[in-house]
Amino acid sequence: RMVKADLITKLDLSNNQLVAIPADLANIRYIEIANNPLTAVPHAYRDNWASLRKYLTTAVTKASEFRRRKILVVGGEGTGKTSIVKCLTGGKIDVTKRIRDENISVREHTMAKMEISYWNFGGPIVTLPTHQFFMDTECLYLLSFDFSSLKLAEMEY
Image 1 (cartoon, one colour):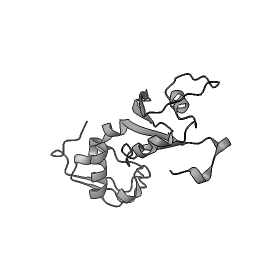
Image 2 (cartoon, helix red, strand yellow; image 1 turned 90 degrees about the horizontal axis):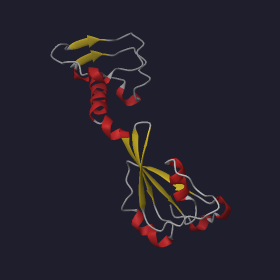
Image 3 (cartoon, helix red, strand yellow; image 1 turned 180 degrees about the vertical axis):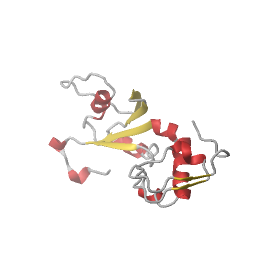
């Protein structure tokens, strides 16, 4: 529940040993935050209320975006990408059988109230040029290796 900004215009929280400021206080025009450790707040936003307020506002408005994550699983052919995705999403695998996936497959999974989409990229070398169209800065990359046959000269990632 957001605090109504018209009810509180200034609040002095200085010298309280606070480690965090609730995002609900972002509607208050000015809060004195001096001499608080604020260890739960990134360093860049600890110095003044204007920057901390912007950070808190973003945390409230963007919170739903952080509940959905995209994980790109990439690696060479036969390195276990499909098996990794199956394990991470609760599926069962037969370690005696080799799974061959030549396309890009997406598997949705919910874990701890977080929606995760695993993008499993096929390993054959002919599919490598297509990977760039799905990569972005907001996703996590999981790189799979087969260390028993690792050839460093062939690695392109």
